Length: 306
Image (cartoon, rainbow, N blue to C red; front, side, top):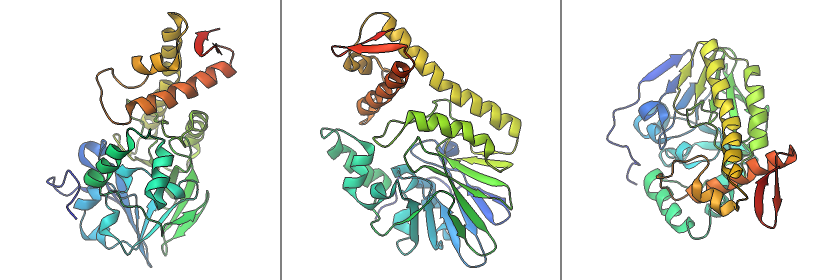
């Protein structure tokens, strides 16, 4: 199997924290790449996620006995083909998405018109391979590697089973796709939840860690004040989207289709297979939340400001 792109890049630079090695993907893990960790215990070695950069890590990754997926998305699974004998663990809520093509299609919630092209993209660009042998873990599960323990903390919203992985002796937490990026939170899958994402963001400062590693963009935080400032800015994106949607509705009653066409989260000229489906689910979730607050209402298929 050919290596997924970008295969021509040099190996990622390791950042070591005792038994933990953090590898940052291309451009600090900007999609389609991502960041990852390799954790070595006395008895076994585990990777946390397997993004494109894992194809360039070499023996440190290829010798892993276990891959713990923080959640199920193609950009965190693009190296699994290199470790076919390694066990794969995923939170039970994301397990169906890892187990089959059909499960992943349902989790993404893409329309039938888009799915065939998306499946080919997943196969050719990410070497996406379902893992029906993946085993489930739960919130609070401890992966004991022998003298090193990783604890799963469920932080849903991005996906239903999205988790942070915490190693308390080093005070390090991998918070995956609560990535603190300038784009803001992503909750556009069929299993995503705006309400859960808001709750997870409120819980994040409780994570017992002095070193925070994001799955994309920001990389490694060792300055807590900067982490909390970036977290606040990231969370504020949700209110910005609420206000943008209210501004869109200020011009008069709108159908969801017209709001999707105008775009809430992606630039108007951004083209990808999933854009319309993701915009629709994102807009629908914001409208439902705003309606629950009495700020918008629907009548005869049209949404208006209250």
